[in-house]
Amino acid sequence: MTKNMSTSYTFAQNESISPRQLYRLYVFNLLGVGTLLLPNNLAKMGKYGFISIALGVFMAWLFMWIVSEVRERSRTIYDRSLDKTTYAKILIYDLIIAVYELSQAAFLAWIFVKLIRDSLIPDESFTVVLLVIMAVCAYALSGGVECRARVYEVVFFFVLIPLAAMLLFALSDVRLDYLMIKDRVGVDFGIADIFAGAYYVFAASISVFNILFVRERTASQIRWSVSKAILTYAGILFLLYAVLLGSFGKYSLSEIEFPAVVLMSDVQIKGSFFKRADALMLSVWFFTLFSVLNMSLYYAVLRCENFAENTRKIIFTFNKNRHSCSNKQLGSDRQKSHDNEKSTMRSWCIIFVIAVTVTLAYILESGGEIVKKYLGFLLCIAIPVIVVLTIGLMLTGCSAVELEERCFPTLVAVDVVAVDTDEITDKEVTGKEVTDYKEYVSHRDVSANENSGYIEFYYNMDKSYEPEYADDIKTAVDSFEDRLSQKADTNHLKVILIGKTLRNDKAAYASFMEYCKTSKKFPRNTYVCIADDINDIFDNMGDYYEQKINKENHEDGEPIITLGTLLDDYTNEIHGAW
Image (cartoon, rainbow, N blue to C red; front, side, top):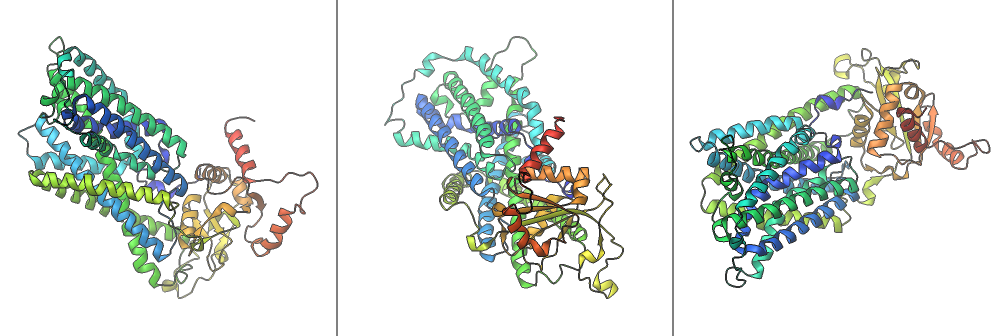
């Protein structure tokens, strides 16, 4: 396969997560807050708490469906258009989401530290425990979502099976008289409290919002995986609440801070091996809280990084001629510089996010009214704003790019080329201005099967844009579109020109086919043409389109080759069909 430069700085490649991993990851995300904090907040309603759970879970599922619809319509709300208005909108989105994610991460970190200190090491200082947890989180961030998804895929049953077993053991201690305590509606609580409880359940499940940023998965795959996760979470939460209500009674349950953890210590198991079952079962909430905390930190880092990048573009990109430096260095050199800048920016964003989270967690540790005000901010401002933002994106078409801000390329040209880097030097060093990349570009030997050159890529847009050269097709496409003054809409693509060098390079061709399959960037019904040199055909594409569409360049009965044809042949070939 073609070398992917992005592997040198990969940060949570979401496209690598399978639907099964997505399901298990979101089970952990949902269980962390819900099972730990909800039971005592619902306890005063007694059996009516089940109604709140059902309504809250339905609200979470409905919100998940809305988010997946937003994602499906727009793919991403972060487009590559270089329009100032668009970037201003993106900056607002990034800022709102970053504030929300940071606020949630700080609260989760505070709860995490509090749980560990109260249950395991009460004599240890808050500072030490917090810094250790955040250091582990920073390390996990470097591995990203894919790494954590694989870990949770492995530990999924090792965590949930003991939890289910402990709940079954606890059933023997359930007292029916506790379950039959009369719930006095209008005295102990009102109808509004039931809906408030439902909102608490929904707020504990708000992590489903982050499926907006899951890439390379269809809406149906995401909905099915996360729906299963929500149902699993609902079933466990129903069972846990029933056991807790029957074990402690609703009045006692409402006064226990972490009732699920206390329940684990009250479960009686024969023998002396499980005397500290609560310490063993604390691993359930360690993994679940760590999962949702890392997810909040991860998306906060991405939003901060995106905010910084778009701010830089607004400040610098619009104050200089975009084309003045396009010929001063090779695409590969430009890409290497971009990678280094991106890696540095990401490191600073991680440091910033960790620092803000630690600071907010310290503020929460002061306790008292600050915790109430902080929770009020999360429940009454942060979460409602996220919900309104999501619904607004769906109702407004979910796109930040207007029609006049789009361009519609009708041709894609892609090939593999080898570049003699010794002959291309910067004007500041040689005193010579490089005016044409192709002057120094020579095609590789067509018999080569190993890709030692660069991918050359361009759309048939403004000819002032030079082709993009990169180590892989995804980087080449992204980099070229970054240089366009409008967002490229490829839904109207007519022809894909594939250079003969790329077609004869097995690794490069396979990489291109895989990109077409996974990204779905180019329509399957796009005509395909193999060219000796993709640059020779460019000037006569108008006549070529007309001839191609009218089939005048084909003999009668000869089939037209489309991208779909190539993809089908490639897929069958790699599965050994022939």
